[in-house]
Amino acid sequence: MDLEAESAAIKVDTDAAKGIALSCNELLELQKQIEQVEEELKKLKDEERLYSEKVIPDLLHEAGISELKLTDGSSVSIRPRYYAKIAERNKAEAFQWLRDNNHGDIIKNNLTIEFQRSEDNLATEVLEGLKKQVGADRVSQKEKIEPSTLTAFAKEQIIQGKFIPMETFGVYVANKTIIKKKE
Image (tube, rainbow, N blue to C red):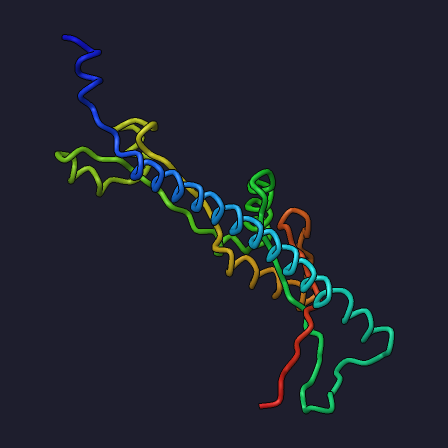
């Protein structure tokens, strides 16, 4: 096989290659612009959160005002917003606290068992029986709490004045500025 002869026969369309290169450069420029816009959006959201959760609530508090009506008919008020998220490192402690304090019913407990096609009847056995019959390595357990359930639970406990370990549950309560525009 004569590579030199074959390579001489290969023709490259340089105009097509230039077009591809230009389009790739345009794509890279668009991706760069998107990254810049996303970074700017993140900054704007951070600034919006600062005004909504800190600046305006502090100003209203200093003025001793809980709600303000504006001349255009809009109103400004502050409402608490509740956030909760259990960090992976706090999961065992948080779940144990819930169980110890009679709130274990908000924990979803999923068991996953892998069966071969011929093992349909085995699926009806109890978890411990399955562990003995098919091996613990084929049985997995996953516990979780839906984020909205956790947030609602934390809000309920705080409003009712009940103790909840704030750090364990990643609870964050923020004042949120609500501006209602006149319709």
